[in-house]
Length: 127
Length: 127
DNA sequence: GTCATATATATGTTCATAGCATATATAAGC
DNA sequence: GCTTATATATGCTATGAACATATATATGAC
Image (cartoon, rainbow over the protein chains, first blue to last red):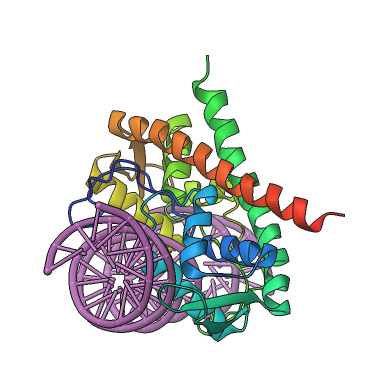
């Protein structure tokens, strides 16, 4: 989220505004899995379209997948066929699909909040 | 942020999507202070327009104000005149104003990310 | 007079999360 | 053999939200 990557030991001592959207990665992964079952490494690549750029933390992806499985929003099974190390193939459950719809509402609300800020900001600072 | 208010001891065990936007309260308070110096209690009321509804936590407001003062983004002085308990009147500094502009950019980016989600969501689920 | 409420600020505690680091293993390219 | 890409996993720390509680001053009700 932070664009300059200059944090001192991730202490957030710099004033750069992060405004991280907590757990936003979850609905993103759920939506990708609804489109097509996938394993973590593949998701990691696809997540860039949601602003999780270049250096996304793999730990974040894998840990969220395991957590969502524990919650019953996704299911997984090991895939050993093919080349390379074994992959854990995830697919979304119906509970996971329900959650996507709930997130869509939350996200609409959040957009409204952010847009209210920008509107006010522009009223004050633009001309 | 959570609409139903049914958390068990704030353990976030329910599946309600929060998607809280971390520290978003800070640029909101800075913008309000840019408009007009104010004390915490007054800000608390005005913050509802940014989606910090009804039962906003006073601790969050006051702690963020003190933190922002420590960072040099706002300044305060006690006001004893008038009725009622003493108020700490805050005003924004030039560093605080700079930060508003930085946040405006972050917020634009976040809107884009959220809108990408919604666009994809609608492509998949709407008709 | 005292009781509840509104105004105003402050601190304590807990939990989940992001962000960072590191470890492991398989396979392909050179 | 060495490096890199693929693939998953865990450990650690700082932070922030959400909750609770404490304090004090003034006002209106009864």
